[in-house]
Length: 115
Image (tube, rainbow, N blue to C red):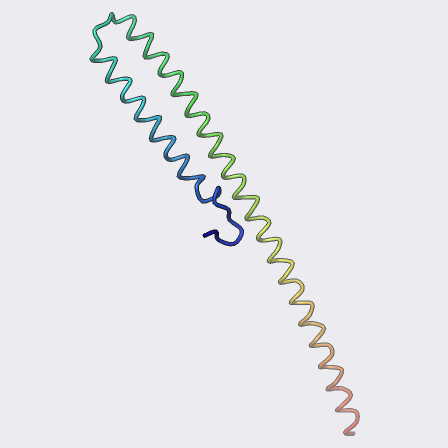
């Protein structure tokens, strides 16, 4: 069931990012464990670690970009919400002013008629 103004993609955006970060962290920890337990030379292990570090860095940058996009979308929706509510509030204030002006005129006419 979707909330007003929010789609299913909006509600999954944060959980996808969190799952991606958890997946990336788990993969990185598994790679480190495999390298520490693997029977290979120190130089090969260093090269593998550098490769894993590069991939992890790329993954972190991708997740940061995704998070930035989600924040930008939330800010845009917040601005739209405020603009919509501001328009409704402005219309309500104007309607109240017009009603007050009409009531003052009516009371003024009634007062003049009584005198």
